[in-house]
Amino acid sequence: MIERSLLFGLDIEELTDKLQCLRFESGAAGLTAQVLARGLRPVVVDRDGVAHDMAAWPGSATFRSGGQAGLLVADNSTRDWEAGDAAFPGWLSGLSWGAAAAVAA
Image (cartoon, rainbow, N blue to C red; front, side, top):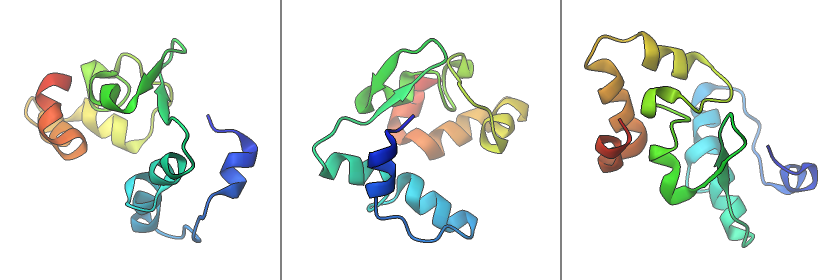
C-alpha cells in the first residue's frame, strides 16, 4: 500500500523488463530508498494488517520467511519459495535477506 500522491511523486523509470523492476523494488534508487529520502517510514504490512519496520522485514513471515504465514499477495517468487525441495527455500531466503535469513527461516 502506498499513498497515491507519494507513488506519483517517485522517480520511476519505464519498467519494461524484470531487471528494471528489481532495481525499482530494491535498488539504491528504488522505492524504499526514495521513501527513506523523503524522511518517511517504509513498512511491510502482513495479511493481518500488522506493519513491520525495515529491521523486522526478514522475520515478518511476509516474503521468503516464516512459512510466509503473513503473506498478503502471492506471485511467482513466493510460489517458487514454497515449491522448492528442502534446501531451496533456505537458498532463496539467503538471496533475499542475507545473514538475517537464518533468523527468518
